[in-house]
Image 1 (cartoon, rainbow, N blue to C red):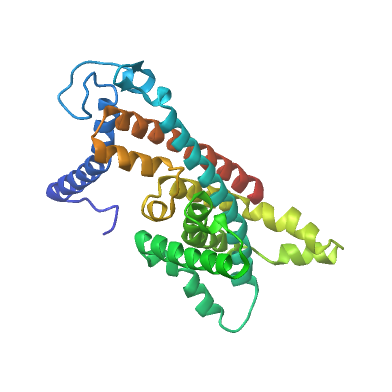
Image 2: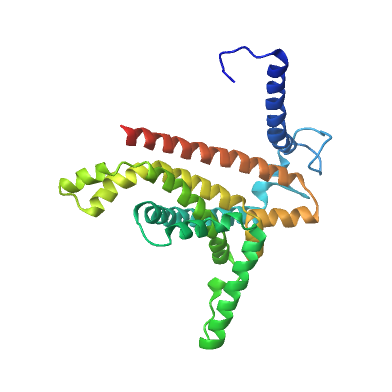
Length: 289
């Protein structure tokens, strides 16, 4: 449709109605969760019983708020640590993968690229079970053959990091590789002609150009790791990340603390995403100038 042509009233009404319905479905549940995080009632749903901050800072009786719940805060810290490890590994390996795929010509590269994307289409539960079964077999073999106990391959946070990394690295690779594909190699050639070493060119030209994509990949990796549940549930040990702990508490009975945690995560995730987006925009402007 040509934008300059006038549209009939029914089409404009349908467009606005579709947009309103889309955003209502998207944001209305989040708004309900945010509002009832302040509801003065022992349940996380309507009706409204008054305003309270107990579900954030309460420490009396059965009303232990988010910031007074040691187990909840510990799980929040656990999720943060796991997400940081996954982010560092995914960006580092994703950058190497991007150079391998975009810069190196070798036999079977297309098959390798498709194989790299396989974890993205495997259900998280299946991926977690597969990694757990493989790691347990390897750990048992090493224990039986050499008498060594490999705790890293037993259910726990290292295995959670490995499980999340196995598919998040593919997203980081695609994000960084898409920007590397648009890079003009004549800048590197000019630097080589002026006597720059390979490491100097990589440090001063290529990586600064890739930095916005690396920041974006870091943001995506961190948020995807933090909210992951399916793969994490299969691999977790005694230290439960936030998603697993919230799932266990929901099975015991819903509490408005869940709303408070959800609101806190929404605000924190939005702030992190905005900061990383601004950092990426600044890097893009610096690279283009």
